[in-house]
Each structure stands twice: as C-alpha cells, then as structure tokens.
Image (cartoon, rainbow, N blue to C red):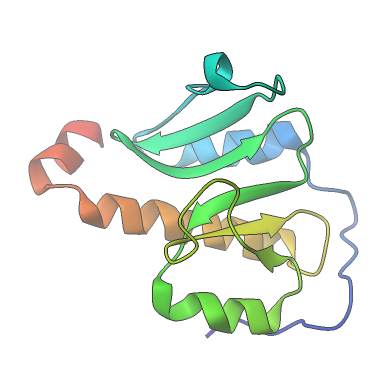
Length: 136
C-alpha cells in the first residue's frame, strides 16, 4: 500500500535534480541509459531511457524534466492515481502497464524513487534467469 497524499503539494527541500535522478537510475544493478528516439523526434525532444537488459524501466524528456514514465503493476495503477494527483497517463506508453509521475508535485522524491525501483524490479522479473545473471 502506498501512502496517500492526494490533495496538496509536497514541497521538497530542493527540487528533483536531473543529474541526481539519472545517477539513481544508473545505480540499479545492470541498468544502462540510451537516447534511442532522437532520430525519430519531430520536436527535437531528447528522451533518456533507462534499461535493464533490453527492456525499458524508466524514461523522461531531458529538455523539460517535468516527469518520468515508469512501468507499474496494473493492479496498483488506480490506487496510485487516487492517492496522487501527480500520477497520470504515460508519455507514449500503454496506460495499462505504465504511468507518468510529475516531479516536484505531491509525490515525494523518495516515493518517486520507489516507483522507479518497482519498475526496475518488474522488468527484471520478466527477464530469464540467464539474462538476469548475465546482466547483474
């Protein structure tokens, strides 16, 4: 169960920082980053994607850095949306399996990181044992 904060902004001591967030994502064992969509972007957006093996677990627009998109257990999505105003439809993802999380809103930074870790774990669980052992 996620702690519910619906109804008010949670002001962090400092706003979520793109470099600290990037370092957190890369600190997860076997994670790597890439910008696979640069050549397809009409608007010139630079989407930074974090992978576990060949599967994405988190991505965000580096130019705006307003939100990230993470994989989520379908059974938790509605609960998260009811608890947090900053949880919304994913950017360019299937809303049954992915959510977006706005930074510096009503989801505390530690909870954002927990959602990223949960996404990483869901992706890792979907890999074969051999793939996981080759990566980690």
